[in-house]
Structures are given as C-alpha cells and as structure tokens.
Length: 503
Image (cartoon, rainbow, N blue to C red):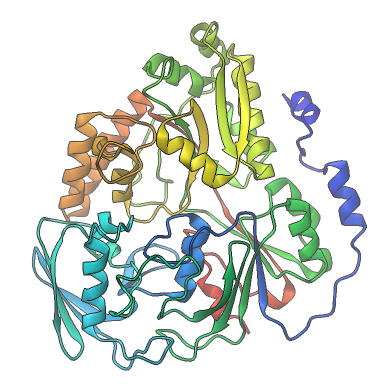
C-alpha cells in the first residue's frame, strides 16, 4: 500500500512532493507585518453571502461573521446559548417566550425590535421566498412581537430542536423578503459588515453597531484554489489564517516556518462515501457492505491525513451527545473481493480540491484491489452538487461540515427528502426506509434528550445494517495561522468568530 501511494504521488509522513518542496524552499522571507486586514484563505469560491440561502460550509462561516441569530452555539459543546436573545422561557411545550437584549442595532444603525425577529421567521417559512432554511422554521405556527423587547414563538407541532433552529440570522424586517442578494448586501447584527464581495473575495470591515464588541481589524476572505499557492501566501506573510485549507501532509512544512503555527482540535463533522441507492449494483446491501470492507480507513487516516482525523463508526463523533456505540466497519479486502469481483465499473465523484482528489484516488485504488474498477471524476463543487441532486452518480466523497443539531439527519436521510420528489431535504443517497423517517420524526418532536438518543440509536443500528452511506472519518478542525493572528481558534464546528477578538 505504501508503494502504491507513492506511485500516485501522495505525500507520505516525513516527506513532501518534489514540487511543493521546491516551492517552499523558494520562499525564505516573510514580508514585514503591516497594519492591514487579516486575510483568510480558502480553497473554494463563495456561492452566496445571503444568509437566507447559504448552505455551503464556507458561505455559512462568512455569513455568521456578518449576521447573528437569537441563539448562538457554544464553541465547544455546540449547545444553544443566548446571542441576540437575552433569555428565553418555555411557557408550555409549544410556547417559547423570548426577551431580546436591549440597545442592539443593525449595521445601518436601525434599532433591533421583536418585529424584525418575527418578520425574519415568517419570511423564511414562506415558500415564495424559497429559502432552504424553511425546513428549520416550518414547525413555528406563529411569532408574536411583544414590544419593546419581547416576543412569543408558538409551535404548530412539537419541535425538540427549536432553540438550535433559532440560530438562523435575523434581518431587518423591510429586507427579509427582498430578492436573493448573493453579494450579501443585507443589514446584519454580526461583528463585521460587507464592504465588497465577489465569488473569490469578501472584504469585511468592523461593524460600528452589532450584537458584538467592535473588532480591531477588518477581514479579507480570499479564494485560492491551489494548495501550494495558499501555502506560499502564508509563508510570505500575505495571509494570516488558512482554516481547514491545508492538507495534513503539508502541515509539517509550515508549522514553525516564518512564525506560522498550526491550531487543531477534534471536529464535529463527518466525511463519508455517498452511494446511489437507486442504481445497480449499489441498490444491494451486500455490495454496499463489501465496498465498506474494501476501504482501509485507518491507513488513509494515518498516511494521507497524518493522523489528524478519527475513523468514523457512525455519523456523529464519539464526543457528540447523539453518538451511540457502533460496531466498527472492519477492513476485510478478501471478503469484499468475493462480492465485488465482476461488479460493473463505477465512477467516484469528488471536488477539484487536491487533497480530496488524493483521498478519492486512494479509495479508488483500494476498491480496485478488491475487484471493482473505479474512475475518479473531479468536478467544480457546484457542478458536483447538481449531479448529486439529480441522482447522476454512483459514488461521491462528501462532508457534513457542521454536526451541531442531530436532527439535521432528517435533511440527509428522511425518505421524504429525496431531491426532485417534492419534499424538503437533500437525501442524495435516495434511501427511502420508512422506519428511518418515523424515528427521525419522533426524535425531532421530543425535547427529552434520553428519548431522542434512543431513537437516534435505533437509526444508527439500521444505517449500520443497510449502509446507505459509508462513514469514513471525523476530520480535526485545523488552521494554519500567522504570528499576528495567533489567538485565532476554530470552534468545534469550524466557525471563525474568534477573528473578531484578535488584536
């Protein structure tokens, strides 16, 4: 396996590809620190900075610097905490009374009131707007402003996840129903306001008024597709933070060089192999299980990921409250070969990110060793998601980047959420088990953590038997930071709010 990985040009522990090594050697001096904005480099273009429509990981991370919701998430436990709300109280099982913090103003200077909150919720619920976030507010029957600083949220049906749902950003009531604004020119309550944005760059300035203390510096979020180019910007002192944007095998070449440091923590995410359950031969559980047996996930974590991940046994990592004990998916290529030999050639889709391509090629190689020919196809991320939504694929590598509220499993695995079938969700695996839908619904209706864990445990056992997707690993949250941004830390779900507290 080690020889094969080297043949494909994958970096092994203790070494770097020759091209990358030359590039690093060519960059020996760091530009002098200057009074400039912090630069964050990311590998993908931004799709939309309109918080009503943002669903991709980097889009959400930027919008949460500009906007804020009633509720925030604790950076370690991911439990809901007051943000724009000062406090809340359940009057009964379906009524939540909320008190807002006093004196809050949007970036424009407009005062925040309960009517803004209720207008935002009503707009997100409206099918005419078409927000993908309507799924998280659809259980809200009414939102009643109680000026000057209170409001009541009344559920039309039980909803255990209400507090986490209220993390959705609040907009000014006169802007909540305007047409989509991909450039993000909407009034916000976050620590930054958008000065300028394109798909490859977002320039953020400290907000004079918001729900946060005013940051000391602005932020530029810049898309740099090539990993070597991102590394060079860090080494040259032109970039300050690369959050989950440098592959693990390249981290040793950066840490300690030109005053760069690596910040890492366990991540609330999962990388998985998406399978098209409607398409032969992947419609057979025996074939899906054999694919899982053919992938040496521990080898990939150890070599290609430099041990900066934990092998996944289910969707949630062990530290998450919804995690349950699961039997490991053992690596058994001999058993896999008995099933996979003779299976038609398959295509494995992935993004154009070099590290993701490297991992996809390793998976394809392992599956090939087990008897099934696999072609890796790299696609622009938007094109990739469009292919997955239409079902035009065999397999794909994907990540759920923010495993916060476990009810998000309904978005990905509820039988009523298959794209194109009239429901709300992204069940791209096209797994339609009715029991899964029932358990997800019941877990989402009950506020008792013990009851919810029971239903998620049932779902975990079912998914382990059927394997509609193959969990691969939970990647660490890793950021390379410059000396001037040394206080930057990623939250458990990988967000960047600590930028606002840097000197």
